Amino acid sequence: MRYADAFSGYHPLVNMLFFAQVIAFSVLLMHPVCLGVSFLCAFSYAVVLDGRKALRMALVFQLPMLLLMAALNPAFVHQGVTILAYLPSGNPLTLESILYGLAAALMLVTVISWFRCYNAVMTSDKFIHLFGRIIPALSLVLSMALRFVPRFTAQAKVIASAQKGIGRDISQGPSLQRAKHGMRILSILVTWALENAIDTADSMKSRGYGLPGRSAFSVFRFEKRDRLALAFLLLCGGSLVLGMVMGGIKFTYYPMVGGTWEPWSFALFAAYAALCTLPLMINLREGARWKAYA
Image 1 (spheres, rainbow, N blue to C red):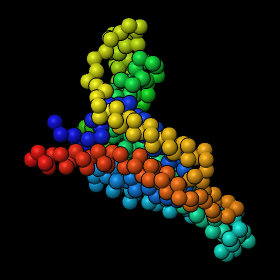
Image 2: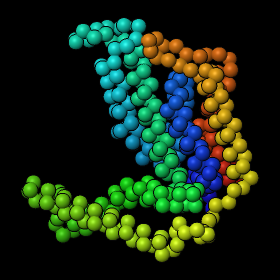
Image 3: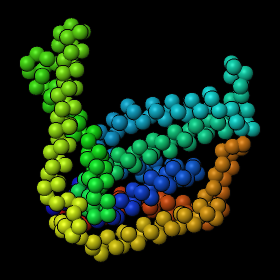
Image 4: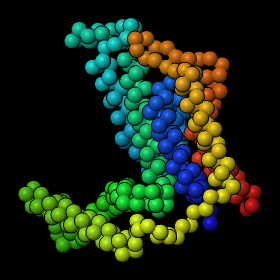
């Protein structure tokens, strides 16, 4: 079978370690180069996974949020030595506050994009495979919580369509009647969610989930490609942690903009780019193989 995303076919441990690293480094590394690399890779991977839906989300949600955050920071934070102008309130508008606002907004949008990719790749069966024996109860709860929003949305559409067929949709009738219809749909949806949670818990309990010595079938096998990918992730992650400790990718915004631009810093940038582009490179290699076999 050909995977739409080849990286999703790797072992769950590789998938989890990759997302843990890129999300953590996206938050910790505020260097402009690192932010730009992480954002481009996260956005590109989201497009690979979701196509036009990712583009629509970027234009409708992420871009306005980025601009809003970038504008709010200099309006409330006035630190910095480079004064560009004075606001009507008399507070200074500084270059540093503008740049930090842009960096913080870009970091938040990047993390959201990586989490979007995580939800598409790390399915509930992968999560339970990794943590089912270590923390069986918590892993089941987290797995249900992670898939709750998409299932909740899909079921809401089904209920709304059924109610619309009998004239009880939120778009039908006067305002008070539409509000009652909306409350009815919400009530049905909450009842469905509670019953579904109880059914899932009873089903897992009847199968002996979490009992000592319980065996479980798994389709995941740790192969040679997984070992190579895991070694690559550990090498890149270890290099970046060492670089952070030694100050090789340090960047500050207050009181003035400045950062590390040593020759070995560019080696760390390359390691970070290699880490973030791993799923894209795997997909490109898989696509080239399929073209060669065609």
